[in-house]
Length: 120
Picture 1 (cartoon, rainbow, N blue to C red):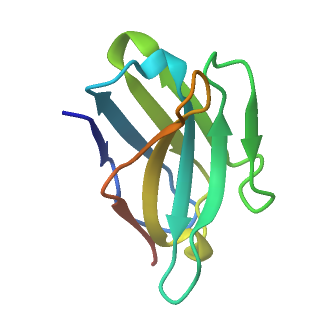
Picture 2 (cartoon, rainbow, N blue to C red):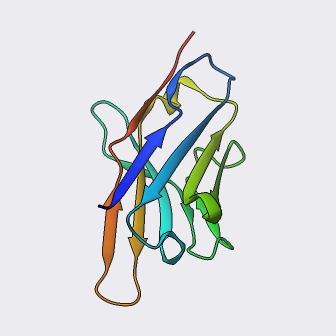
């Protein structure tokens, strides 16, 4: 059974830090590009960070550059999102996403989401 399970969300004060985890099971983790998305109330889901399947390439939304870091531990089949200097506008449900582009057919999985609330 394929699963992506996020954890690590919660309530944090502005300027604080959280580390989100996404544990993968049921598929070959190393062949997948990993993404973190977020969706705030009343807004569309947006891409926050991307990590290539081999771990050598990352991309970030402009709004989180310099504050968030995506990484993976292949031995644990887990991807992380370290979030520092958190702002109230980072409040959202954060989702983990795994995508395999090759070989065909494309495969994609989503986690259930974890709530992050930044508030004093």
